[in-house]
Image 1 (cartoon, protein in one colour):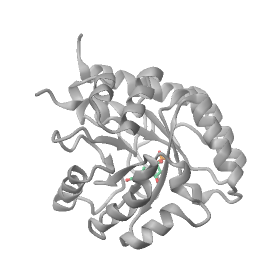
Image 2 (image 1 turned 30 degrees about the vertical axis):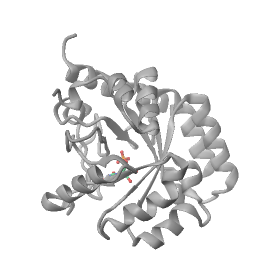
Image 3 (image 1 turned 180 degrees about the vertical axis):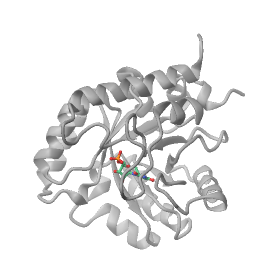
Image 4 (image 1 turned 180 degrees about the horizontal axis):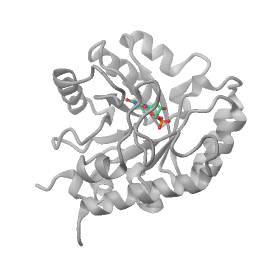
Length: 262
Ligand code: 6AU
């Protein structure tokens, strides 16, 4: 059987059992984009402006909603409007890490009510499988999906070896899990997607341990599915729309190169 990395996103969407992943692959194909924007900005106005500018070029908008200093319910409504306008999914990068009962409360309630608007969220499996079950109780009835942090992009990260393998085992066994945060394709057992942060065309890292690799390395060579890019796209002196287009193009070309000649 051909590796999932050798199949088109369109084909994988057609064959996938999870409606959310079907939708994601369909968006990727429609927009010819495997780019996710890491929108790490600290005000509502900045987040909405960024999502509107970059929206046409991405398949997934990734948020850290708890860094927005003036968060309110209207922000969520406006993000949902932008998701409909530009045809992208929303991924709240919450990195849950507590016992099942606590993450249920954190995911479904509080100020943010993440499960009400984020199509995708993620968690560490350090507490054991109960964290997936807790999140699934809230997210599954709403058609949401979960990514496990099988690896991280930062220097000295501890998610390696047996810990990473355990993530893969748990993902295969839980249908609420749609994939991973990590640097590569992890399994052929079922079509679990990989989204990769720490992607940059220009910089090699930052002062706090972030490490950047190129779309070619991540998509063509490692078989990951989606690149997550933040500061490579926006920031001082950057033409945000132009950079988003550049990363969309780089990610898509890397994907076409992986598929090889027709
Ligand atoms: O491109 P950057 O470095 O500006 O942003 C990278 C984004 C940030 C991080 O919180 C996130 O990706 N991230 C994650 C995610 C997505 O879970 C995991 C990881 O290992 N490294 C990482 O940078 O929003």
